[in-house]
Length: 369
Image 1 (spheres, rainbow, N blue to C red):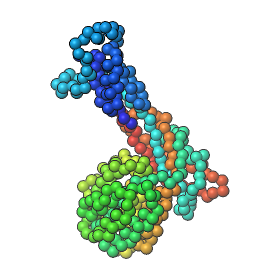
Image 2: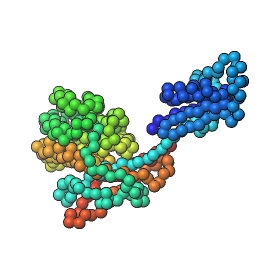
Image 3: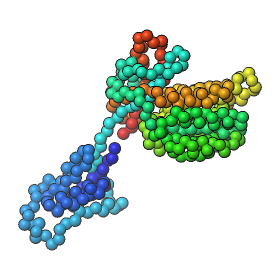
Image 4: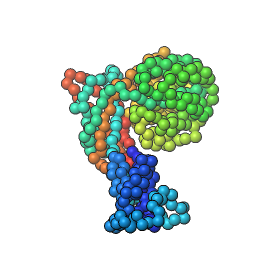
């Protein structure tokens, strides 16, 4: 959405200050030459009509003028008193709010269920049922961020983790884009958005395991990087073997960032069995932390104990992202209050199928203005 601002100068009521495309300025100059009483500004998709309330001066009087007036396109000086009504008069604003909720559906065997129709879904916002205005189950392009653990405890797990990334990329769409963040003592953006998956895999080849685990900082950085995404569907894949013990950001700050971002989080937690050896408090909290971040966004957390399962799980996540349903609705509550709205998706059970389960984003923040 583009908003253009137009201000009528008090000392020159027939002159117009335009902040907008060159075409709009040319249009004003052309109209100024043809009439002395009115100025018209056309903006697409809306139209604004700005002009004097005075009667146009006779053509003869205009010819007697010493020199034709030129539109004043200079910005007002900083010390000029602000006009409190300028923004209200000059802004043309078009607002359309559409909320998109990706949904994954599985059966009791944790297998993906495809082929459902719009009629099989109901969506609620703060317990009020909404009208599903858009429904899609196509493989749309994704913007994906990889958040890769390179802490010291990952040493023996790096090779399988690289294989997991390779398997995940095999499910990619040619129009997908990816970035890579590695973290140990601190996070680092290794590769910005690129469609070249080989570039990311090559950089992972030189990854060395060392240091502590700044998982929360890595997720926070990924959320900021995702603001540069060009695809409407966005996801983050975390590959880590334990809880956080080195981040500057707190769990509360990261939770808030995750809630505000329209990003799904998938996580692969590589955890040793509890009885295998002593585990720190951070390692014990790791599975719960990853599960909470993932489930809040409509993604999922997969905890594995056998490294051989890692590539298959990564491929499964990639396939799941390709087989999601996307439900779109315009909220019945049009208040621009900036409050968090809770979302719930319910399934209308199809005949002949076992009980199904839906995974979806649990809410979003309404716009504040």
